[in-house]
Picture (cartoon, helix red, strand yellow):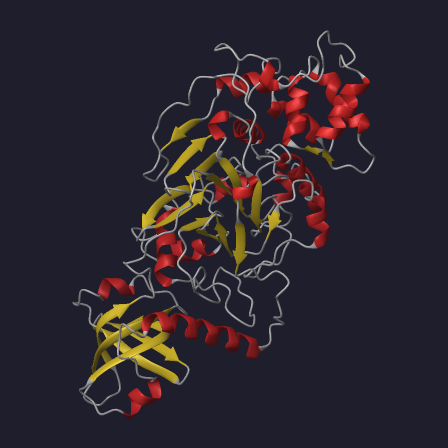
Amino acid sequence: MPLETPARIAQELASHGYNAEREAVTLLAGASNPDAALVAAVDAAEPDTLVITADHVRAALDRNATARTGDTPADATAGSVPATPGDPPVSTGTTTEKQEAASRDAPVETEGSGSAGTGTEPPAPTGSFTRDPDRAKRSLSVQGDVTGQSTGTGEYDEFVTVFRDRYEKLSKQLRGRVNHRPTDSLQAMPGGGDAGLVGMVNDVRSTANGHWLIELEDTKGVFPCLVMKDRPIADLVDQLLLDEVIAVDGTLSDDGGIIFVDSLHFPDIPRTYSPNTADRHVQAALISDVHVGSQEFMADAWHRFTDWLHTEEAEHVEYLLIAGDMVEGVGIYPNQDEELDIIDIYDQYEAFSEYLKEVPGDMEIQMIPGNHDAVRLAEPQPGFDEELRDIMSAHDANITGNPSLVTVEGVKILMYHGVSLDEVIAELPEDQASYDEPHKAMFQLLKKRHVAPQYGGKTRLAPEEKDYLVMEEVPDVFHTGHVHKLGWGQYRKVIAVNSGCWQAQTDFQKSVNIDPDAGYAPILDLDTLQMTVRKFS
């Protein structure tokens, strides 16, 4: 396979099990015979080498200045080869069927189901390009990672502890909005006075007259709160999930046994919140649900995406954030084995690692697990174990738990795979949460300041010493996956994006009427928080 472009060189090295330094790829791309130069560089590497360095390439080129069959010096750099307007894009080649298809199907921007895309075609090809990021300006840190911190054994007392922690954290965000009294104090008060309560939703039911009775629980007990059906706040009751924390304000009944609710408050994002931005123009690609191992994994779309990352148009994309489901997994849904291309879970991760090597070696990769990955299903999910990390070590990705609050050059990005979105969509009215507009379900989680409020439903939750699923800090960006639908929007200045998937519709998805949005990559400008969604399928 001719290796005219850095992208093709990186992919060919990946097929041999190697990653490569940027300078090494540049030297190979500039050789008169890149094929021969690559073979020589691999031969020059030590047997246990994972990364081909510039020194490996120079050693090979010094031994054979003409790259065995070339007529010009093999150490010529890509910069010495003039680019012409007729050259193909650097993300595609000219001699293979896949490369020709990539050229024909150049990625275009798309508006998806959100409001940020421009709908324009990409620039015309301009020739080869070498990425040259300033790594010294980068910064990435993680908070709220349960990896290595999990202590839960499933004992009753641990569930009490985690729910108390949830209540304490969220009640702090609510107590300034109402004149909170503990339930035991409310029970001792005379009827007819003003009353406020911060509590966890224990039950919601309608009365015989169509009013809503909400039972709120705090650390002292349970107290009933009545929302009259003709009050404007009655619509908010439809948005309630069990076990979330809210505040109510109103009046005690004459006998003091119930609160007639006048106002209802969620923890919510403060209206005064101002998002953080990076100090320079730098971008992050937000993706999820790659599903390597599935027969429906879209390898060609993935190749087009990684090819594009090697182009000048993507030179500012320095971070890749993957929100779970790297592989298809095994035994996740009925008859899944009939839809697998790779049946062994470890072989699936080996294959994913090879695909990941196509990503430019200079990019920072952050990933969290999902429900198809080989970790526990209960949330919070710790990151991958050492065996899986070793499989994916070549690109040195930063692997943390689900969820994780990742701060990228000052921008706080809450990464959560998104299993609880199924529950939110099932429980709330369609205009508040739906698969067609997954970002609206994410708005609800932002409003509740918790990524998985309801216990005992579709989402499996594990007790820990604290509740890792509370949004203690307001994120600037909320990134999820799981539902295989593309959607994004802004809620009180917080960007919510569900990034779709890289898997075409499976037979199982057909049976449950899921039509996935596959082959999309939202690209976020960290300095402006503007987003463009690119399609590679």
